[in-house]
Each structure stands twice: as C-alpha cells, then as structure tokens.
Image (cartoon, rainbow, N blue to C red; front, side, top):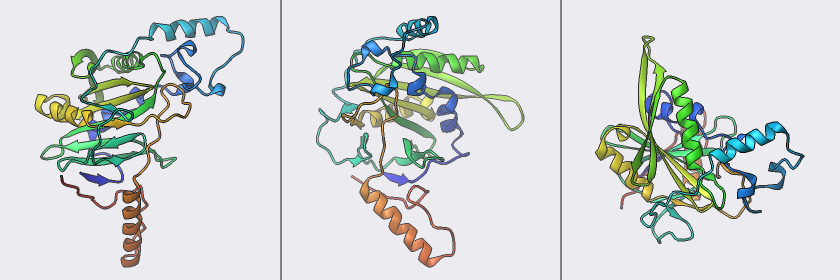
Length: 288
C-alpha cells in the first residue's frame, strides 16, 4: 500500500465531486436524524442538548428527526467491515478510529482539513491508471438506531435539488445510493459525475464509503472497492460523542516518523520549503 500525505486536488475530479461539501452529513448541531430519547449517556455530551422548554419550532424539528429515524439495517458484517471488539487479528495500519490492512495495489491518500490540519478521511485509489477511488469516513452514531437512512435521504435531496439524480439500490452491505452529480465543465456545459454512497451502521459508529471513478460504474472495479471496504476495522472508543460527529483519525507513528525524517533530509539538501508531516511526502510501499 502506497501512502501519501494529502489527497490530490484538481486531477481527481470524480473524487472531489463525490465528496463535495454539499453532500456531507450535517454537523452534530444540525443533526436531523437522531432523537435525544434514542441516546444513552455515552452517546451525547451533556452540553450538546438543549434542555429548555420546547417551542413549536422545536416540536417541528423533533417531528422531522423522528421521520428519519430507523433501526439499523440487518446486514451481515461477519466478513467486514468490523468493529474493533470483534475484528480478526491481522497485520494492520492503525489510523485511530480506522484500521486498514495494507495491500500492494492500493494507494492511500489522506484527506486533510486545510484549516485545522487534521485528518478527516482517507481515499484509497486503485486500478491500472488510478481510475477508481473509495473515500472512507467514520462518524459517531446512536446506540440503538442507525443514521444511514436519514443521511442518504439528505444526500439525495441535495443532489436532486442541484439538478442531479439519486437512486437507492440494494448492495452487498445494504442500501446504497447511486447518484449522478452535476458540475460545470470548462466549456460551460453541464457534466455529470457518477458516485456510489455506501453506508454501514455499526455499534455506535457509522462508516461511509464513497465510490467514484470506474468504481462507481464498473462492476469489477466496484467489487474491488467493496473488498477493500470489508477489510476496514472501526474503533469507536468510549468517549461521549454527538451523533454524526467525525471520529478522530491519527497518523500511525511509523508514518509520522518517516514523514518527519524525509522533511529533515529534504531541508538539508535543498533550499525548497520543508514538507510537513501532512504534506504529500514519501511513498511507503508495503507488500504482502
């Protein structure tokens, strides 16, 4: 598995379209899919809930939340993706809330928030010319209900409102959302980027995978993407989290050390600016 410090911008148009801010899950403060009654003490920080007397607007918001509540889909996860409490013992790369099995045919790009310089997700790129990609993000979820039902409805509504299309399709990990997202091409014409949103409601976590490029339209590439998704291990942790809060990702110590060493060597031998630990850095090739 080749690991780079930052996902490309510009060249990966399909990936960028599939993970645009317009279709991101809402933040905890705007959560529209989970009722407070559905949470236990470990699911939500105390200051995340307004305990004032409910108004008519609050009642309407609660009604909308209830309309998007659904039990978790009954999906067989015995072959992954896994919860860390029941995952098999394997050689893995530990990114905190996500653990991945290295494979030789996948290049892993880390999605970094430009402002906070924190990891927000990972994008696995594969195929002979890097024409397929799958982005992974993991979020906190309630104890007794799933969030995928509500999230995919919101994604579909946003895409359709923007002139695209969205269709629910049965997939190997439950209901998927297959979309065509509109964007303006260089000549001013509207083009459409296909993507497949896959959601997995686990025990107090939600894993979202977005397949783009060939993986969104080609059955063989999609199967390889899903094979990778099934190797993922999610480590939720015991800290209280609001529903849909992004779970923390961290760089494995061995990658951080190598990135820092490379930056120091680069600084000693050139006058170019130093490459930081989360900038695009050295390729780390691991074969099994």
